[in-house]
Length: 364
Figure 1 (cartoon, rainbow, N blue to C red):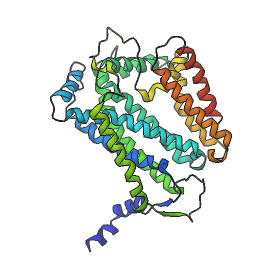
Figure 2 (cartoon, one colour; figure 1 turned 180 degrees about the horizontal axis):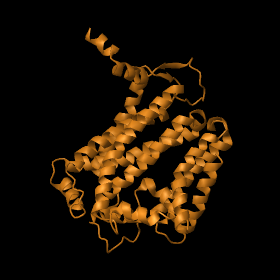
Figure 3 (cartoon, helix red, strand yellow; figure 1 turned 120 degrees about the horizontal axis):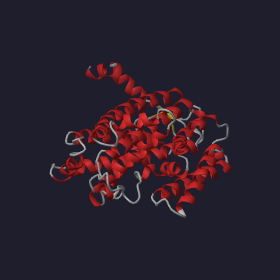
Figure 4 (cartoon, helix red, strand yellow; figure 1 turned 30 degrees about the horizontal axis):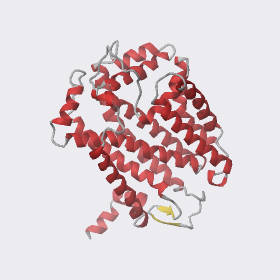
């Protein structure tokens, strides 16, 4: 009797229809598992972020000290913080694979609304990650915030006023940190809501598949077969994340962030986290400050142009397949260049590959 009431409950009925009983193509591979893993990682980030925020002080004089206290004095504080820090890298790895799979199998053309909502989520995630990178108030955090927010001053007419408004003063300081902390806490909630919209739009036509067919004749319920299949990568990734934070938790971070922020002494080479390096290279490759801002914005917004493509799916188009793999190589090289100082030959290589990035994006 109780089971029948649960089944008739409107919320449970929606969850059952949208998740458990979702018609799923039998041909989908593990590449279609990224959405589930992204949802799992988002929950991990929200929970660990909430716990860390309870012990964090967003005052510029105390922020770095509070992070040290979390790492050294709070019981299991270092585990929570390292889970949150490395969880961000895991989230971006999964997000980039998810985006790459969409490009490879022509999702922008077949599911325009889903793709555009995904681009909005990507922008929101990147903004959230940048805000979070500033919060530890280490050397790289402070100078990264100074450089990136300072770029906004290149916007005509309102640029300088906008930059000072974001800073809350003449430079990056306590008001900036307070605002970034509030926004970093708020944006994941908006991302979670957008993820639900993303799922609702996906269910209008149903999931894509490697064969790029829209037929419903070869579909089964998501549960139990695919829920069991999806649990394997979840277990493997969870184990990998725990091994990483147990053995080398700072592998994906920057050692400069273990030095407290010093406004009088800039690091020799200012760089963001690894998942922003490709966009950072595009920004610094343009001699004009305003041109760099436009190029930085377009490096992500160019994904919206893909909805206008009329080409065949990559799997059945050898030329497009080679373009996609070349684009992936270009992004990897841009990421590598981003970790290098702005000097020859890295500066020239960055400019060449920035141009190649846009060429391959526009010709997919």
